[in-house]
Image (cartoon, rainbow, N blue to C red; front, top):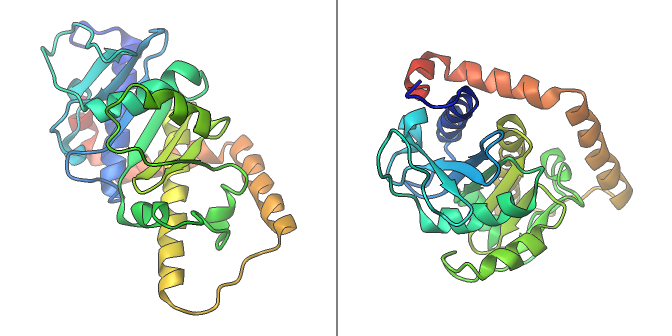
Length: 248
């Protein structure tokens, strides 16, 4: 398709579908925020959205192949603009985390609300316990336009796959689009539940530390059992009628 290697075209289709699923679950912010995917076998290149395309309309051909310095790779779709902040955040992770092939960044109301709370994500729900001991935090430094911030962001992320960007939003990733989607979905739902629980103005119950750690490990076991891929296929079925559009 369009004289693009098959592996890259499949990556484009998968990423376009992920953009549309993020829109389906209302995790968009007009034309801002971004999702990236490292192209198999490309080494120093990853795909990011063409700036200005609503996530609901994202197509494989709307994705831009760029290197870790933000330079677009010549291709059949001409010159396409990308979000500089998206490049800065995502290039830092792709360049240093070989296990993070796909990275999602969002600015949802619930995500920003928890990002503004001093104690961050609390162990209030089963969804939140997925991240117990597995969640990083990065202090806000302004709009992510400075390349200097990349080192600090990566250092704060450490070995984790999910991070709260304080006063900003959420970030999650994984070895595949399926895993990245699973991470952001659970993190977003955990934030939504926390905001609603705290709005009730009632005393909140938190499980013991032993239960929190046990539940976090149970999530690791479920993921190893293939639950992530099952969830991804189930989510894709919700937008299946759009397949011809996103893979174009």
